Length: 389
Image 1 (spheres, rainbow, N blue to C red):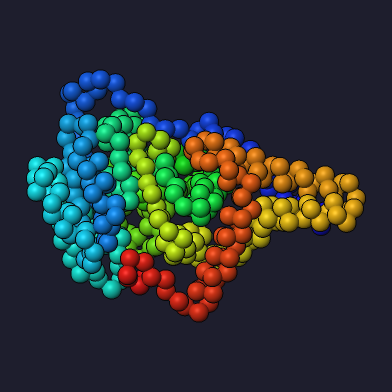
Image 2: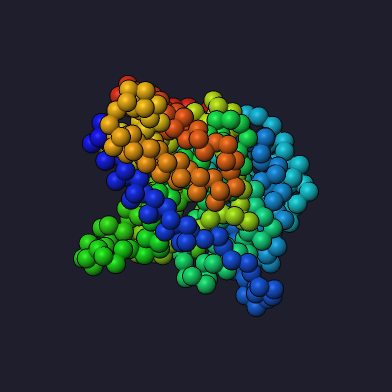
């Protein structure tokens, strides 16, 4: 037992150091000074793939057509929706004919997945210099496009991705979704998304650099020239986590990228029920590890040892009057784990009530991992938006 607590404490010490460093490096976009785009404002295509999005599409589109930026156009692709999405889009297109174009989706080829195919069609139909892809369950603040274009120019970037502020509604959303951000910010040093680590020998950097690529498909902006040169969404046409695939492709090609906190720029409500949450993460979980089963299993075990074991063991250790050193290590591990969740929840303005429930969220992911492994072994394809993946 003591060995497990040593492992947990070492893991938490390293990940806490990364989290605290990211607290400085993971920054929001800066405000745009008045008159900044008076002389030059590159055109922006806001591209929105939509399939069965009647709950969220109107808010998303209205926020997109209300940007405080001189030159932009909104393109929405209706990807064979079977709900009220087409009617909502038709009404919006009538209201904003100069700023909004609604495109009917073409039949999906067999070797493409749905979202990359929809985004590929949007890129083909649009003409502006910068491509901004957002999901239909997001909404933009009025200065979102202006802040993004300024950052791309000021930081000399070919690709920008933002992690939205997440609006959480149900119990399970508040318990589970923060773990996604927590995993990102405790395992990935954000500064290395922009540039490779200096401690890596130069001859290895081109091989190691793509390992630090990360992206959020809810908000991705590309310079069109760079996007087309790496093959665009065609280069990730069969990837479930196409956002990470594109980020790695950009880095492998030698283009520049960075990621930012989406505060005051973009907000998202990913899932609205437990079943949506389960199915949505079920399709992405193993794909996010590149289908690398050993890494997937090892990370699952580490998460269980660091975040679940001390929560279960501490009451038993005191009840059985185990050696004080064992109780001390268990308490230290538990406090450090909850401190991480406290930092993340406070950072993103999520309820502190759910900090003590962090082990429950990790346990939820452990159960999901078992389901995902079962899907993989039995070759079960998850369904999303009434479409087999």
